[in-house]
Length: 308
Image (cartoon, rainbow, N blue to C red; front, top):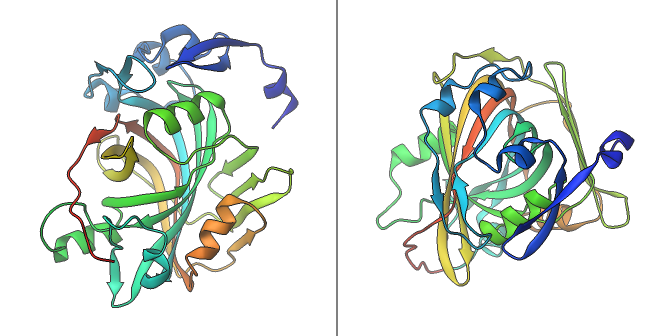
């Protein structure tokens, strides 16, 4: 974390009985999730806000108190490495109610992801994740359409094993409000058109996971031209919930069987989770150098019991 970030003046807010520090004068301090889109549109880092004008917010009660949903992310960059992993190893880390999305008998998909949220309703933060692609948690067999769209990343269903973040408010909202396995750590993510780099620190300041890789050639899209979605499943107080996030892709690229991938697994919760999945090989690298995101609050969902 830079010294300027450490020295930034903060103010305290209560989220469902938990106190968090947020940047004084930041978007959360000024707007409390009800952000003025015209104000955001004047930020030179933001390409536009038309995507968000078509997504009205609603107020809901949640474990973190009354809040507005969705949470808007106005300038986002992301990187995801997708790997083949044995279904047996994946199943050992999945709740019994969920099943891996298999691309071939005995083979599922695991991923390690990195996120940088430059402009957001809850201010700047970074995030990383180890996730598993799962079959949609609904009744009936998985159709061919589900597999094809899942592999194309148009709509993915996932279960997240670890989700470190860089700020208190992101941790409390994500853990208490969404049921995600979030904790706060030092976490650097830098993504541009040439290179993608990230480092997640462990409790002792060493490396948990790091990545360095050339960024795939980027294709630009008009706002609304390419919108993907991700459904994540979590258990909150013993009840299954699904969380929808919608991504408005503005510039992104993909490399299949990517080369020059420097992924380092050190010591920590993320690296332990990834090793437990026994990844075989990296099959795809997806990097979005610019995008936008709407993250909805979780809703109760019916999850069919499955046999392991």
